[in-house]
Amino acid sequence: MATKLKIKKGDTVRVITGSNKGTEGTVLSVSRETSKAIVEGVNMVKKHNKPNAQNPQGGITEKEAPIHVSNLSLLTSDGKTTRVGFRMEEGTKVRFAKKTDEVI
Image (cartoon, rainbow, N blue to C red; front, side):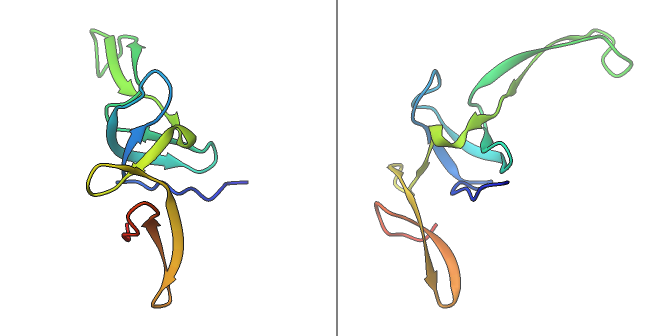
């Protein structure tokens, strides 16, 4: 069963634990099934590519690997980490930053 996540594509987040602690980036994609997100420039891994028709040389490329959403914290507009809450405003459900009470 897929879980409800508080981080969405396009959010600016900071890594709060692990080897990439303190790095910030924009969320490129989120997988609800695995509760992982791919963040721009965070958790870079090297991938070894075999030579093929498109890339006859082969080689090593660097790309972002997924990171668990529990290791990410949303950033407010002034660059501070915050938790996310949900509330109803004018009949629509909105996300808001619990630290600053601003709608995200």
